[in-house]
Amino acid sequence: MSSYQFELAFRQYIAAFDGTNDLSPAEFKSLFDNVHHKDFNYLFKDARVIGGDGMMHLKAVTPVTREEIYQLHSKHYASGQKVTLIHFRKIGLDCVDIKVRLVNGKEETTVRVVNTLSNSQVVLSREIDKSFPLKVFGAKCTNVVYKWKEVGTYQTMM
Image (cartoon, rainbow, N blue to C red):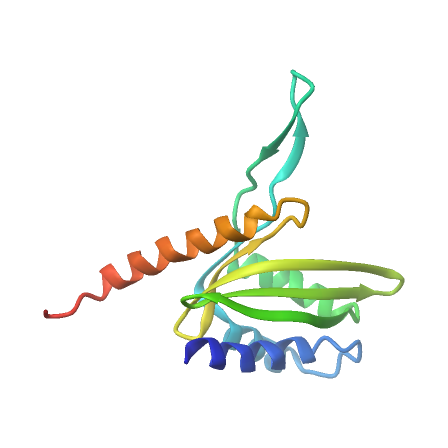
């Protein structure tokens, strides 16, 4: 049920990015809070680096906090960025794969993110590099590990 509630909140959130910039900062913050968990972290895709041996390596990027993402999204909203949902797929237990198109003026890009949900909010987002298809599987495995930790936190009396 939490993925359904998250989907509704997420669709309302991206609907705000229609280029009109007609929401007050308090309304935008409320939409952001409905989607993002208080412990939210965002992992950008790994950076490609050419090593001393001439081979391409992936360098892990440090996670971005909820407040940093809020500042980034606020800046994009204020600039009139448009966001279009390309796909929203449930790929596991409280895990969704989302792909969106971002348009800001003449610049256009697509972003694919695998999200781990907790209490109908995204707690971990991992940006996926489309040139590495197994990254979705890896992000899904990370989701399973997170959910096991979450279940261990809220043990039952069995």
